[in-house]
Length: 336
Image (cartoon, rainbow, N blue to C red):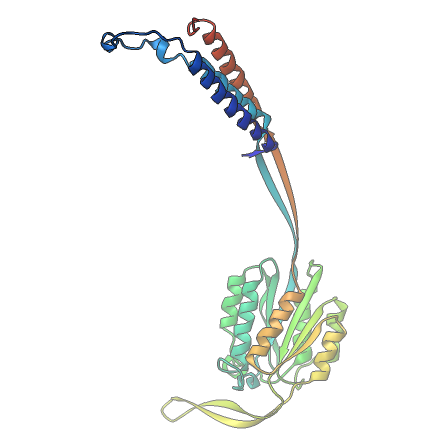
């Protein structure tokens, strides 16, 4: 409960002063009788009227307190909040070619660093539909755009490299872009976003990157492209089985190259942004930046209905005041 005119409580101060003055004056005017001994009065018990002689003034004082509370206009509030959420549809397109196993990113390799960062990004969203597409020499939709974040996080954990998933290795950038764009083409959201992550350049697929880019542009999709890892000679882990069936990891030389020109054009021509993430920390900063750039629009309309609660206080004040007035002039009347 709130009070619309809380300044009215200031009237309690003069009321208290008046009551103190009244009782002080009454004490001075109390008639007295002189007795030689009070032994005779010890056995006299006060009557009910004597005990209640201050009741009229008490009732009137309480009535004035209630009147002051009524003047302060007590109110109850009923607040309703209506939120209009304008969500964003996002498809994360992740390269799972075997080069993503290169161990130049924490906690283990490029692929695990990407998975960890993607999961944190998904967990930070609340009202956006998010989908997941993976690609190597071919492309697959793991999760179409959905609000079921638990399902997406579970599928992210299941992502493995092309060789482990037994799919064609390579880097089909055009096919991946077309597939991710296809998942957004029927979106009703005002903002459609593709987060495209790769550590290589196009060397596979039946759709060239230029065609994939035109498809994304045609659907009005904004592309945030991310080049993962460092360029140059490195080593790629290769897993085989020995004669005892045990898994053995060896390394073979590999030339890592990111097609920055293509990734930059993907971002520039769609109104997005290009990033280069050469380590895990940089990748986290990239997703933090995208998270800040692509904020869900939430309009909050707040409606408050106030109900006046002063009538009961006013009625009770009148009842108590007239009750005190009646008692003071009848049964509890003081003489003289």
